[in-house]
Amino acid sequence: MISNNIANQLTLIRIIIIPLLVAVYYSPFEWRFLASAALFGLAGITDWLDGYIARKYHLATPFGAFLDPVADKLMVAVALSLLIESHADVWFTLPATVIICREIVISALREWMAEMGKRATVAVSIIGKVKTTLQIIAIVVLLMVDPKGAHLINMLGYISLYAAAILTLWSMYAYIRAAWPSLAGHDEHDEAGGDENETLSKALNEEPDAQPSDSNSKDTK
Image 1 (cartoon, rainbow, N blue to C red):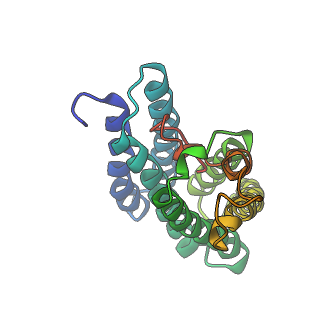
Image 2 (spheres, one colour):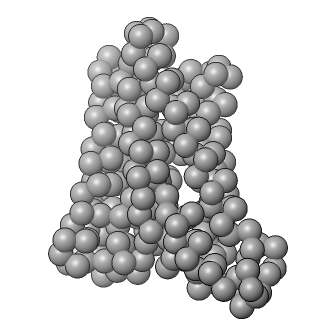
């Protein structure tokens, strides 16, 4: 499952990076900010690479489909938590909290949809890719400099983070709206529910990491 599947190995590496990121960020060395940004950037590269390898070489597995989004969300949540503590102001905490809370809500909703057999309708789209890219840019930029200095660089990070938060809310709204017939308890065989799978595949497709056929594809996380 893992030993002979390089895509899953890359996903595991992303999880292993998490405690290293925390240790480096709180280390006493002057280079800790740049090293933290480099670690998160490396995680972002493995995030793209594992999905590419899984698709190109047909290495998609159910284990990868489960682990990949978990690794993504853990990495983002931990990095944002570190930055919340160091920035310690409402203008950073607000968008970071929006992103973290959204990931929790959508993860729970996706799990519930999977139990209903509707998770496979989720497909890849540009929304998820842009959101994920903005999150990575924001976190890398904010990790690489002292929160109390480099004001222009921090401003770039803030702008990217707010843009990611806006796309996060947009994608969450689209996800919940598409899933609402099921949440409201409507029978999928009702007149309005007959096209539910088609609706889900179009409106939920900002979540590429949930695509079972691309076990290591990315969101968006």
